[in-house]
Length: 491
Image (tube, rainbow, N blue to C red):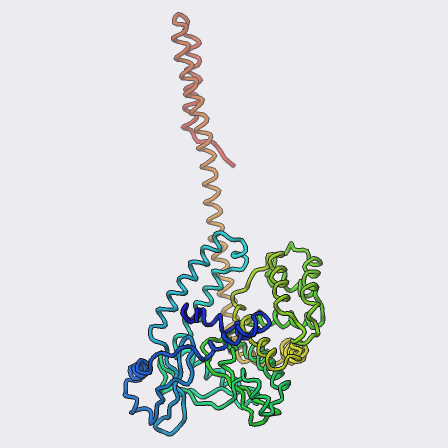
């Protein structure tokens, strides 16, 4: 209730904690699980007004039936069952009224706290709190535009088209707007209802293994992964209990990785599987996550101390709370930088691990993932991958080939022009240096001339009957003053 009152950002925090029963007591986890789809709904009249305003039509003109009682209610939106005029069963997702203003208010406070933290805390600077909050801000900004969620849903559906692992519902674009989205209604068992899944005869080990495979497929094959995989967004099609199929909804938060991040992560995972902690340490240095002057043997020893106790064990045997504390201590000790672009991936991995712990505690997460990652790396860096890359790039190379001589000539010509500019600048600098030398010499001569002029005056006043010394000093003064006006030769 406190998290609901604080707002959507805190509700999402509670959603993540609800999957981590190794970190919070069971009674608290049960309560936090209600945040997944049992947040207090807003009024049906408000939902109806939003839908009609967005679609520009009365409900009766679009739907033959619209259930005003929400099917589920979460932090950002709620969904209603409906039937299109065509007879197709759908669900209508409706944004909460004024949700953007509430999110902006909370994020504004988070930005201020992050600025304050980094100003006064070296630990906050190491964790790059400001960048993490900025990344979270951008993520939530995308989540409150349902057109973006609809596009994400369509993309994920395309990636797993005809897949036995994952089903993603169809989007009805004709009835989708920034605050309203209409998608195919799915039927499945909530993944959090473990007792019901077992009663339906689901092979829980296969279900857990498939969940791990889906995660790594999204990350390493597609570079596009569902980053909000709490149990409220995941269902299971139990039609074939031995080969259960996942169903994913709510694609508002999706993560992406570039090729460098993917390769880095894959190599780290494989080094971990092989217990090659030295390689993990080297990868952290190569990627710039820690400073180059860090002792590799010392960092390797720290990683070994954190990872070795959990290696090869099932989820039921691992204390992830203790493991995370050790990792944070290691990161702090070696001033390891947090990578904001990987925050969503880290959050998703926590979800996957939490779900695996509920579904099949005997699951060895690392052993399940290892074959898939090795296969992916072979496909990425083996001879076949090189051939495929050449085959993909060859038409572009062929198209550009006739232009290469012209491009080379242009570049050589441009280089010549740049060199001419450089020579001209060099001459100007030389002239400026010579001018500076002349000015310094002139200043010295002028100072000496003025000094002898003053001496001449003093001699004349001090020896009024003998004017030769004063005349000599005056003559020397004149020579120096003339010299200060006469240019000198410089090399």
